Length: 616
Image 1 (cartoon, rainbow, N blue to C red):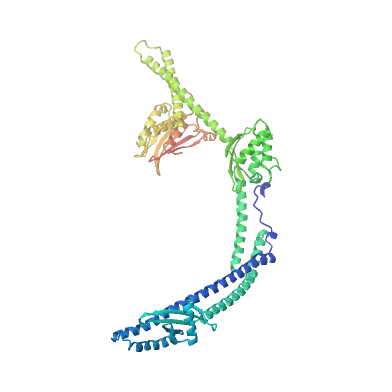
Image 2 (tube, rainbow, N blue to C red):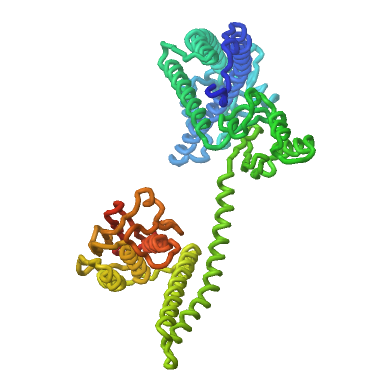
């Protein structure tokens, strides 16, 4: 088990558990099977004989019924011929037709192998196929017994079928010897007994053969598997397939066990699995590290209560009765109620615990360190409170500052007493400072609106060159006053679908920064198409930005201090680039910067030609 042991696969049965046993095979399997086959064969034998007898009896009776109808038709045909020849009712001609019927009866009886008796007035008038003595006995028994199977005085058994022929007042009796029945049953008996004997012999040989070629190899394969060895059987194709399949399954099981252990060990959460008796069966090392357990405490078979006792004694669950705390912890784990909860431990860390039931009645517990998450939640709440505070404060500050600016403007424009030059300078300084303060307040308001998600993008068709030249006109007087040359390189017909107000604010911020931090040289504003985007580049020859500052200049309240030769009016809050970056994201674009200290900077804002949503 890697890393001190954390995942245990269920052990396979030992080789002794599947050791072949001749006694077990013969007495437990073959003996009952053969006994059952013999008992079933005996019962089937009597059923077959009974069925064969019933079938033979029914067959002979049905045959006699059919023959009786045929004999009736023979006699009826002669009566019809007598009628056709115009001798119907002629008693002198009737014996001639009756004689013809008897002659045809003889042929019929000989062909069908039956006897036929014509009874007239209770006596045998005509007999064929049986002796006269038997005929007399049959007539006597038929009148007294009324059965269709008769036993004669000489010991013979016969089947009889009487049928009346009214036109001549005859009673026709068909006779068949019962030897045909006995012969059929005897034949069935011989066939069945022979077949059963052959079947039992073949079955016994097959059982012995199967035992040698199938059962023993299967026991061998099972023995290898039980001992944890990959079976190497060679012989019968199907058993080779079984052996190879088990071999592959064991290889796959080994690989999956390794993958499972690797996965378990690589998880960022602590994992512990307990069985139905609440004893530890699997875990990962992150669980041990997360709870800083000492060596030897976490081991296979350790009870959940003993492990939790260590946590309670260490103070993870705060002050209180240790026994009561432990009882509550064990009960919650046993009932999985609640399935998820959080613990603030004595060392200042926070843990999220999740439990889920296992199929065998145990449970798996996942431990997640949520200290950073909870701290981030607290920071987010604090940041939200800060943003709300800044928003409220900015609103409250804007009103008096605006009033100061307006009062100073009215005083300077008043037609009454003109202020002295010194007074005018003081008033102008107040106006400038108030306007600078108003700009900072507006920046705070804008950032608060961005953080609150209150900035709405309203895209429309925009000419990028127009916005860029408007931004240049804002800073051009101040730049020219310092001797800084402002140049433009505009690509015509650059139209985009975006929010002109937000894009204009970005460009004014970028060219304003270029003017503030450039003491000499030039500022160049360029526009161009780049694939599905439009780019506006603001390049200056100013002081540049230190490399270590490039990663933070777009963050809130971050500034690069002025360098030699740069005079930046007032002191800003460091929100201009942060606001510009957020506006660019809202437009689905971005801002990039390249800078070399002492040589200048290049800021490039890129926005999509077709606005399709906020770029997060």
